[in-house]
Length: 200
Image 1 (cartoon, rainbow, N blue to C red):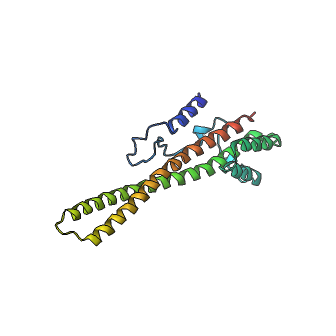
Image 2: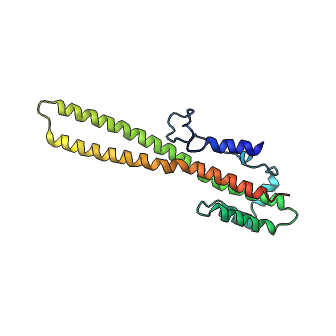
Image 3: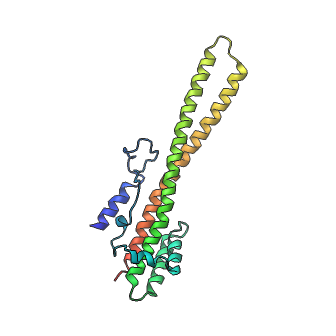
């Protein structure tokens, strides 16, 4: 049941999903999932104070930091988990849980930063769009004058062209930016699944 729920969550956050209507300013096609919790991704032992104490272990911190790096392919991350799990003793399950919680924290921090960046990005685009419309109106009004100031008109048109170019380029780059939270969510899930495969 937990696996089916997680798959549904990831599908809801996929690029083919409609934009979230909970936040009309959300600029991405992907559905907005404001925050994640470990319980959504983890079906292993409960994350207790003892587990969090284990997270101070340098070995656990080191592997969690590596697992959190997007530049490391998930296949390599799974191999790292396999090697790490082989060397664990009686407290294996607790240590694997600590690795998950630490990796989740690191990846979720990155995801939260990306989500905040997208929100700022959307606000900037909205402000630029309004500025472009204002400039267009001013240019139309200036052209409608009997003797328009041609130098001023040329300057305003150059500024408008530049603003429109920036707006278009930012909109095109938004596709990649919007995919990042989903990529991070899928990475958390893949790491969780790999760690849970070694639980006893």
